Length: 326
Image (cartoon, rainbow, N blue to C red; front, side, top):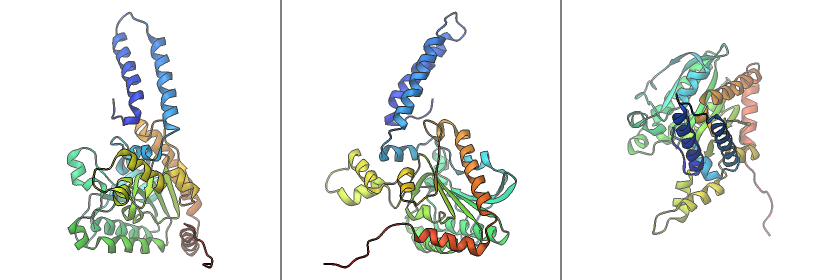
């Protein structure tokens, strides 16, 4: 059995009962198939009811689920002949960002993404998916390489944010992110980006300036985390409560559904019932289908047209009021 979030506890209880009944009937003359099927249907209906009515804070928790597939998981399921490339040629190799060449349906592409790591040792090695400046510089090096050889770029976004440590700041964290934004905006090759988990602040957008931006159904994308927002706005003397995080998530409107409504993203990629971690192969297939469709739409566009459309799309994000004060 996997890890269950707090709002999934009713599902966990039912699935534990189902597993127990299966063990009881294993190799014994006890026919409880009908009861097992009844409970499985009940669990499926309950899961559907819960996941069709998730709050923004619950979606945030789901986007961070420890069993959720990460960039390298998806690459292994959707790409062939992947060869990882390392280093920024300036300082070091940052394991929080991975990238390399691979093929999707026979088309050679440059794949780049955040990698959080699974298990304590790997998470520490990959700094919990929080890149240093060398990570962004590695990503940019690979993007420029893709541009040189006319390869389509595919990025996977999944980070709480860029690492805010002293060393990262000393090596130019803000400059590295800003340079990526500038360079990506004028790359003469198609860019497809997908938020697969958390899209946190500048750490996410540094590899997210794209011609096509998609989000998985239960992913989030925001300028700040609900915890960070709540801490800035409402922390006074005592600790913050879950209600504060939920309130902040609602104010931030950070879900895929919110951002599609704001026309920040192009579309939402469906997840299997219960989240991508319930059926990684199913989620990967949906991602691969979306990427393949986007490649077909973009591969024939001339570089000048591509850059112009990218510029216009980015300029249209947001809204403002123009008037005179009375």
